Length: 380
Ligand code: ADP
Ligand code: MG
Image (cartoon, rainbow, N blue to C red; front, side):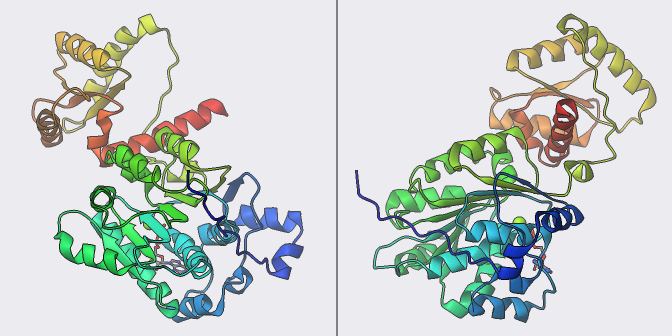
């Protein structure tokens, strides 16, 4: 057991105006910007000057010409600057990158400088190379004034230049999980100094099957780090990840889940007995088949692999040829099934387990939103 020096994580000095705001005013502001907060969080700030950022950060904000913080920034900055673990759920384009990069910069500037052989202070995990590079641009723009170095680590390109950056030392690593693990295993870098951890687009990372890699990386980071997780949706897999790796976190939702759901999907919840299901499914397929246009597609999600096989057989017998997909099928088979399903033809029905839904990409995103919504309305 190594003795770890305690981390300094709380750098937030609330602006007097923010601190003095009445609860009523705070509630009113949150309502007006659709900010929903779970767990104890500082008051949101209402403009940039209220964030009390150091000058070197403020200067970069002014240079960008932004007028006011977005909702996720208004509530996210004071929370992140306080050193709290945080889950931020807000739709794409709502300014989440800056919501974690600016506090990262303040965090880094308040830590001991890197020594030779030290790994990064901040680690940002992202699902794709493109996203990692977009994040890097923001880190470049806002980290520049305080000489914060960063590098972008992703698969599919030569390791040499990335390794050289790592060996030279960087305060921020922005990485896709696979390539980072590669470098960690080779000892090119390490996460001993990492005290600020960001999981960006957590939902997408899980959709892409990165969960085992994420867990492997997170196990190497000291447990008292600050962890911030960002997502556009809040499915149960993401909730589980948050519960496993974040401590006593503040959850911020922007906008109701209602508005982020796809209104093109008509939802019917039919609560029934297990024994009725098969017959109901048959009737439903019959109805849908009679009314929908020939290009429509149907995905049936079921719980187990066995059920996938069973239902595929049953509906096949009734004259509904269906494709099926689940975790026991090889990657080749799964790719084939998805291609066939997408291109249409004879097969317009797919039976799948939730796990297999990962490969369904855009479908899955819509379906996730709907499932969330459904759960909410059932719980309500
Ligand atoms: P998200 O990660 O939530 O999808 P991004 O962080 O990529 O969103 O930001 C989306 C866009 O909004 C970017 O072009 C960014 O420069 C811009 N942006 C971020 N913060 C602000 C702000 N406070 N005011 C105006 N534009 C902003
Ligand atoms: Mg983003």
